[in-house]
Image (cartoon, rainbow, N blue to C red):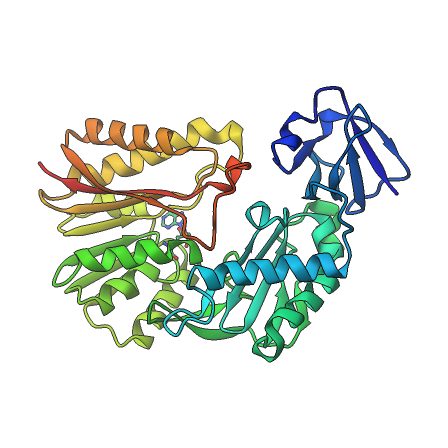
Amino acid sequence: MLKVILKKGKEVSLLRKHPWVFSGAIGSTEGVLSDGCTVQVYSHQQKLLGSGHFQNSSIAVRLLTFDNTNINQEFWNQRIQDAYEFRLRCGLAENGETNCYRLVFGESDGLPGLIMDFYNGTIVFQAHSIGMHLNRNAILEALIKTFGNRLKAVYDKSKESLPGNYADSIKNSFLMGDGNEDRVTEHGNRFYVNWTSGQKSGFFLDQRENRKLLTSYVKGKKVLNAFCYTGGFSVYAGNAGAELIHSVDSSAKAMELTEKNISLNGISGHEGFCADVFDFLKSRSLDYDVVILDPPAFAKHRDAKHKAVIGYKNLNALALKKMKRGSILFTFSCTQVVDRQLFINTISSAAIEAGREVRVLHYLHQPCDHPVNLMHPESEYLKGLVLYVVK
Ligand code: SAH
């Protein structure tokens, strides 16, 4: 068995069930460790702490178990079945109104390094660790066991999520079945999802509940959806009776997808703009009742945190300056490095800079198929505020 033995005292976070071992915590190793191999992790006092996937990187081991369970087919079957049953328990799996959801959210499902999204029978598999990618066939077998003939295809889209050299040696490809696109429904709203050409796994499933909340504020109203991607918020607004919807994204492909989804739902009163949101906000009067700002992660790493904060502050100040009295702002951050309190403080600074008085109507979050593992606070990333512009 391959072993990693920690330095003295470095077992503490693992005893609290945080599933990462950083490279600096390793005292010694036994056997020849290669990227993606399964190792047992021991404390300095030779106590077994668990097993996980090794990788030559700053996160050196991602723990799959905190005991002596073997990582075999039975292990994969059980974890995938558990993930499915959890979504069933949350009312997402086998739901007539919603047939797309995140099936596995990494560390929060006891499967660090693995993301899998379910789109009406097609699963998009994204390995964020080499160990997960090397185990893709065992994971596929587990998926077949859990879903049986409800599983149409499994698409491995790990090329973008794995590190350099390894990624160069692989291709995105179907592990089972085929088909690039399908139609899905989310709370009864219809969308095309293309997992082979789309961003991430093809759709931003994490905004499902926040899109639903939007519907209670838009009937007969004018809505601006900035950073719209495939038009998630726009379609919900249209189906909920918004009078006018403007969608903006700098990607021409995203605007094409938005238009396609708007037609799929037979929505009128929509106009799309392929533009930079900052330019759009600067150049127009913001005569909207509801504005949505859902920008991309302004920072992916801790060292870009300051830049991200400035980005959120400028963006929100720009919108708040021009929004009318009595209008509502849905504003988000999907950057894990900017935590909830920092995001709130940043939006507060934006309101001060804009000279506006605002009230918080809702604090928003990621949905239950992206649960936060309290032992792994890094799994919390999506934050949002719904603000009422008083004056
Ligand atoms: N709200 C979307 C997800 C947004 S993802 C949903 O519910 O599905 C972020 C989007 O911002 C991407 O589509 C990206 O193309 C777009 N984007 C990034 N920078 C931009 C900019 N400066 N101006 C306009 N769009 C931008």
